Image 1 (cartoon, rainbow, N blue to C red):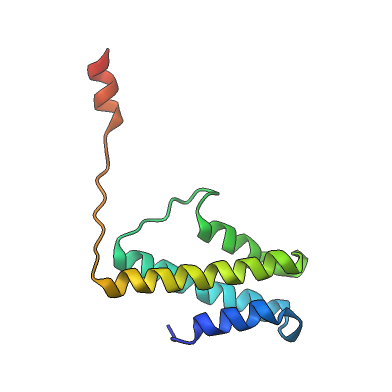
Image 2: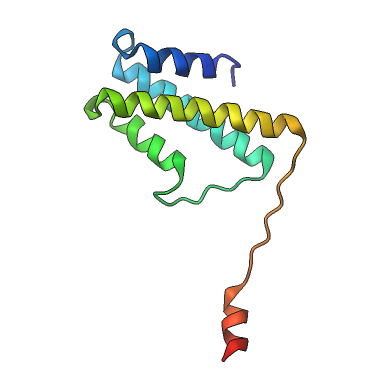
Length: 111
């Protein structure tokens, strides 16, 4: 993905009147792909719930035509921040390893 995506997101967020809503949607979809790729590279899984920021970004991207300017601008800024943060993590060499805890064994032993 291009290194200019963060700059494109910031530029679009600060001048929504200069970009079509279709262009905004395309930019958000590009950002979502970049965020997803970066998450995989550093070991951060998506939750798939409404609390996952990518789900919120997808919602705004899919309905950009109907969203208030403030919501679209916020989504663009949030995407830029996520990409920047994930690039810092990826560049630092930090690798996350998540352990999945089996709660069913704990509740069975508690009884």
